Length: 163
Length: 398
Image 1 (cartoon, rainbow over the protein chains, first blue to last red):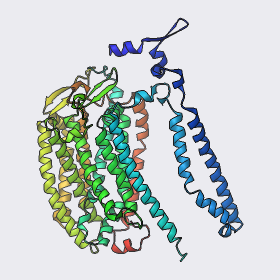
Image 2 (image 1 turned 90 degrees about the horizontal axis):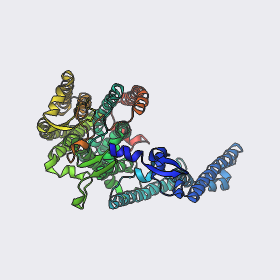
Image 3 (image 1 turned 60 degrees about the vertical axis):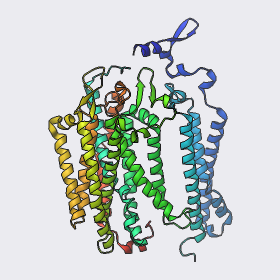
Image 4 (image 1 turned 135 degrees about the vertical axis):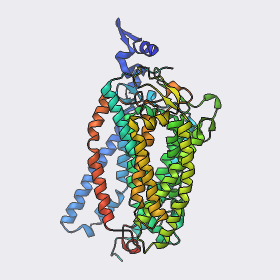
């Protein structure tokens, strides 16, 4: 405990004669370099904008579909239908970019100003994490293909009453 | 290595106590809900496709609730005792990852199993469900076993450095040693795993006996009754080993008023715990056992369909007591045999008083959620047991 206290109140910087302790800095005391204070900007910028653009696209697409339904032309409006089919994977892409925005954008913090990611990570041998990564990757790829195959089977079969 | 002094603040202590009780109740409820996992190991009692789909549909209507209960149980445990989260998840990495993996496979199997174009065939998904039922449940049971036998870690609260296993070994099993290290109670952990598995399987069979139509599935029900009898024998053997362990194992005890919370090994600790608080735990435990046995005799040996209810309630009560034995009355719930003083107790591993207080207010909503679940369950049950016709005509059937 005494060691922890000493570490906590240790002077870690001297700013124009003002002594700054680790306690004053909380999580900042862990960071060694000012450039580590902010996340990589480009991936956050682009992932955020892609997500937002997709969000607006969905609103537009639904407006188009809604208007053509009101006009009673939806069944013959192949443009809207094609756009709708092409948009099927977009929500997934939007969600993924949203996650990237949040998770890259929060770096370097797990708890802002208190706990940096580098300190909250478990010191566990890399091989363990690699092994679980590939275990889950393999399972998810196989299940992902299965999901797609089931989807395509349903689509090929068409809506009820179409036959 | 010593702990930071425990501030024995009465309110904080009562909140820690309260949250351990909630964890115990959720643990007990989860144990009951493992009838889904138990049922997933019983597809072999079906002799044709329609019988198999009867089992799949009966379990398929409940698997999400089991999953949610597990998440609630884990969530409450981890949120109220965050140090347990970081020590056990970071330390016993492989145990938790394999449990997670077993449950990920389960989630998709119900949806994909009987769909055309499912890529790897029905058998593969049936195997996933079986894997979840055996590996997932035995691992969870064994992990609960380590609440009594301890784990191989040291944690220094000053530097917050956790070391799991011995670095000298070269290969760190990351928690899986709990199943092979017989010097440190692997026999008890394994017996606990088998016990939980036997309970899950018995409950699974009892659930199906109750939920499948007696006339349509007469053969299946007859075979399930035989399963109950067989598993009951396995359960008794595992139970004897677990009870022997609880009586003979030295418990990891500490004084709740000791500011340092020094942990020491005490013979007969778990027996003492059973008799603490005016022996209420002993009474609840015995009521649980009587109810469980009653359920088994009603539907396993007798011809009643209702055995699941007595056995289920009994399981909840027994589950609650297992957790209170492990964590209350000055007992370290996640002990370390490598370094006694690294052991986690409800006092040194809990969230702050503020956090627990906020969580306690939120927990007031739990009875309403529970009430809603019971209401929906009742509405589903009211429609009667699953019939063959229902499976063949319902578009939503699995």
